[in-house]
Picture (tube, rainbow, N blue to C red):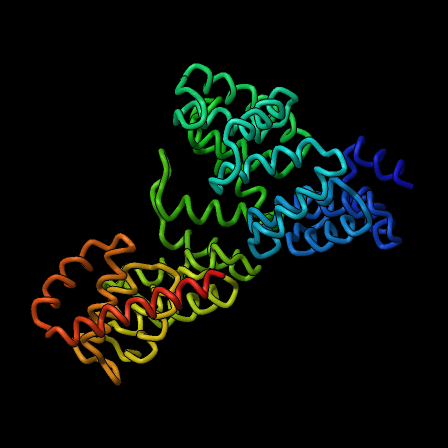
Length: 396
């Protein structure tokens, strides 16, 4: 029966192929579960559904399908169909690598470089082997390294060579209907890497994929319209439209980005009610950067102002190392805007803001130190150590 599905793919009868793979997948055949998941990701013969695709990849991985382990790991890295979880991704890549999957070894090497752990030389060697063997993502990574001069010598000519190799391979895969390849090729077209810069073709590819239900294409379009591109003016309303499409499908990054768009930096165009609701949803789905924004919203001058809520959100963000939130919470304490406001705690928090790289924290700490007596400054030092201990415990 797998042959029947493969024959349908050969004649580009995607509906028949998807139907056959689905039947076999439901019967517990791991290879069919993998192939059906791929069709769900690409929207081939079936409405694209990244969440369902991830579920089928999980079933295939549980059934011992090594490629499914690796492809599910990549979804966890990118947050496609699942919440981003690099730990889970690493476990899946390791399991696939132990079973001889060279691409999984490349993925582990890539994670090693991204995290700053491990031996960069060994990681680059693994990525180079993968690129030489035809792994497109590895080719793109090597090109980027040669552009930046990080881990490899800065070499524009070598970067262009790898981008051309990768773009040629992507074009061939895109022609066969591979949605992931179309996404990557569109990104190269936007940047003019390995191919002539062509915003129109990139947008057309994203639109086609978005119409087939690919959430990552919706997000790509939304971000394009948010900032604009050569030949494509920024369009706030279109950006909102595509972000909302992705939010409806549970995309965390789109939820966070749409919230920022509605907040608009707290300016006169801000829609704080909608922004707060979206930031809260993004937070529930694992986006901690929402904490600082929620703190800002609830301390803004509007009908929803609530300093107690703002302090809670800023405290949670500050414990995660967010300097701006530490600064804002310090201000609330110094200015008496919350119950049990404490000048010594304000000093401790200004210092934590400075330690996190928020420059204004050092200025405020210096001024407040000059105003407080010895006993209060000693208490501030003790409170700062308590804060550091709490933050450390949170990370463990």
